[in-house]
Amino acid sequence: MKFKSVFVLILLYLTIIFISNCCFAGDDYMIREYVQRGYLYSQQDEHEKAIECFTKALNINPKRGEIYLYRGMEKYDMGDFKGADKDFSTAIVINPKNAASYYLKGSSQAALGNYKMALNSYNTTIKLNPKVIDTYYKRGRIKTELKDYYGAVKDYTNVINISPTYESYFYRADARLILKDYKGATDDYTKALKYGDGDYSCYYNKAIAEIKQKLYSDAVKDLNKAIKLDKTSADAYYFRGLSKGSLSEYKDAIKDLEKAKNLYKEKGDKKNYQKTVAFLERIQNK
Image (cartoon, rainbow, N blue to C red; front, side, top):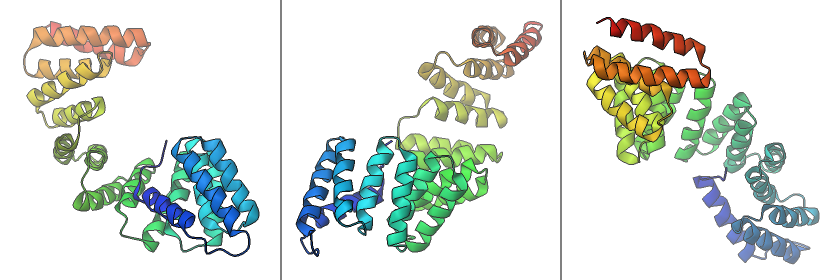
């Protein structure tokens, strides 16, 4: 669950600046010491100790917004999303012009399933700092959750135009698949595979897009790879059987459909079990 973003690098950089500078009023020395200890504990994944240090620093000066961000990230990494969100919100009250605070709040709201609020936070992040490309990726994921697939495609495209990644192509492909842009989806899954090793979902979804275009030979190749990654996928066997049947490879199609049927039965999936039995009967009669 750890944050992997440009903003985290910025925040860690700011922590180093915070530690190295002693230009605070009053109890600046103790604040610096607690922040330094908290940062070191954070690097060692000792989140509770880090939180304790950041809390002590805030007890001395509760108006240091950046320390709420540090503590909030530790809470997030521990799975305390409500606590993290509360800290990020406090940081926003202290400094409503800090884009990092809204970015992090977007992450905590997303983790809590509050997608509309997360979207608002990412919108504000982009308004304050439109140059951080990771925010567009995060917002694209949120738009997908909210079924705004056209908006998601647009955000992923912004990412791809600047810094293409496996994830940006993969999720844009998923959105295009839902939008029935099957060729666009196939192209994006293919491009995603150039940026990373494909997982089951990439090969399986790519095959579905190919089946929709009646590219059955290509679909069989991708389903071979999907099944290699997950030999228990009844869906992959079913659609490989369907593709082979469409290629008149009936003997191999029957083997795949029998495998799919047995897997559906094991999983208690009656609907797909019955669908596969019916399809098998049609194939066997050819």
